[in-house]
Image 1: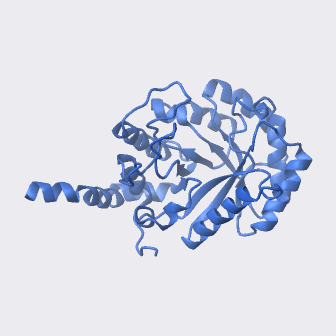
Image 2: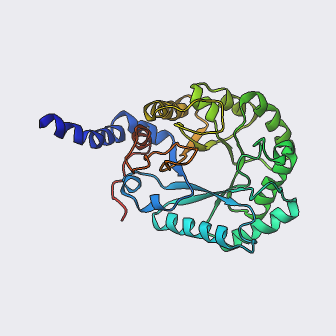
Image 3: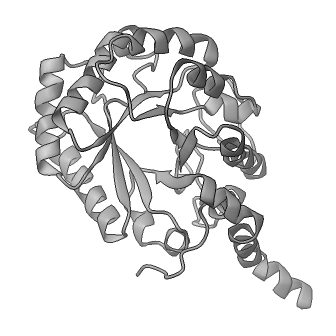
Amino acid sequence: MLKRIALSLLPLICLCAVACGTSAQAADAVTVGISDNGTAMFSEQPFLKLNIAQARDVVFWNAAVLKNKAPLNAARAWINAAESAGVNPLISFTSDGPHIPSVADYTSAIRAFIHDFPQVRTYSPWNEPDWVYLPLSRNPGLAAAYFNAMVRNCKKCTILAGDLYLPAAQLGPWIRAYRKDLQSKPAVWALHPYYDVRTHTTSQIRTLESLTSGPIWLDEISGVERRGHWQYANQSVAAAGRDESFLFSLPKRFKRITRIYHYQWQAVASAPWDSGLLGPDGAPRPAYYVVAGAAGLRHATRS
């Protein structure tokens, strides 16, 4: 009986342990956020327990001007839910299909979005502009023009540069081409170093550091159980938890990394991608306790 009671308390003991002691030092070194397009997490106790006040949503670049208002309404619901939970939103724009907009069309659309949501002060102009399946990946200068347009039209905002994912060998040339068309120095560079985290190496991060200056945010990243469209095999939640531990060790080695957003909050059993901190049944996974250790616990639980 005592053994069963002890086992039932283990998750709580783990959460307390990672949120205290040496892990509190990690919380001082890096700001922790969650990248997830769902609103449910903002009212769920596993989220509300954590000292997390940053979250990221990915929104169609033209959501504010589409005739179909569903994407805009979804963004509004997410932003409102984040605000109600005391969480600061980061919005990353993305493609709504294979079409890549002109700078003029992009500018008109993001102006409308900024007008509709003046409370949003942190943006990424384009999520993974180097994604090889879209023509934007072959036009770093156009991606830089989107950054320039965001800077011009949201002057009091923090605008992330890059938001890149390529492996190091391709990442360096892409950054060089992108950087030369930037019209101002970025306040923050953003990277999704999935290759580094899965292999416990640092070539993506070192490449970005060698070609840029200033803070680096890993605004979408995680240990991944299942991804479905890349070269690495599926792995257990325990192995993904070890990848997560490696991820949150990085700010101690790379002082420019000041913010990490874990992707995603809860796994969907039927989806090809799975990097949830919670399993499909809502139970916390090992990676959840790693994130809890880095973020710490809230002193006053939100309701």
